[in-house]
Length: 297
Image 1 (spheres, rainbow, N blue to C red):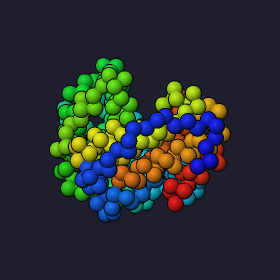
Image 2: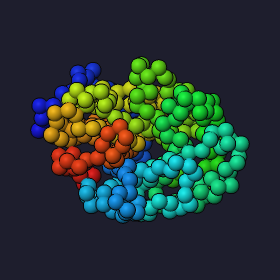
Image 3: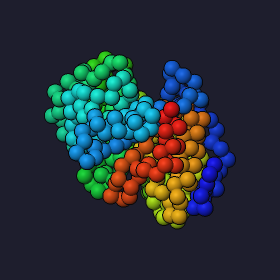
Image 4: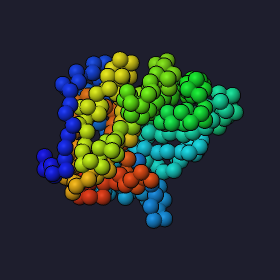
């Protein structure tokens, strides 16, 4: 697989049993072995618009099949930051959970749900990765769950079968060391249509020249989705280039990751293609670009 000397995979347990209905049911139009839709998170760079940024990534990777969008507040009126055509969109927005539950944003959000396109899947999420915000005391887990129930009721009023309520949590939350339990943030199957995860090779491992084996990294999240009988997606996927790696190691890790996600019937895998304060995740090296392009095409 063209591994560099820096590529070290941590030992993995026996392969996770292939999920049944939990993940198979995610791809209603295709078998569980279908390749997940490739996508990415990205930012507008050097004065470009988000539409131009999407065109740049389409050219780089041979055409994204899904698009990840973030709103720091309430979502913009459609089409929003960009027009992705008929591609599925994974869209997150934020507001204070108690304010949401009070109905203060009902007029805006009811209109947004009603105006949502009906020719593509819209995976909408309220306050992705809420775990740290709750730990800081910005709001409670109970407030968060209640806001989700309120929003799901508004979305159902739109009677749009392409709207998918999508909870996005940190994969880290499933680790014992996190001190957390994913159910604290989970409003239940009567509210959520899709359960997705943000999955990263841990920075501490990358600093040591290591990439965690995808079977190890994904085992718990796949098991959770299977137990809840919910479709599975990876809303953020990323790793820095590990110490001593020339990029071939990360590329091999990405190929293994997408192969494992394909085996387990994931809806989509969206690469976190951003330069973030914690490090640069962008696939600017030729090996990483080639790996993601091969996945997209």
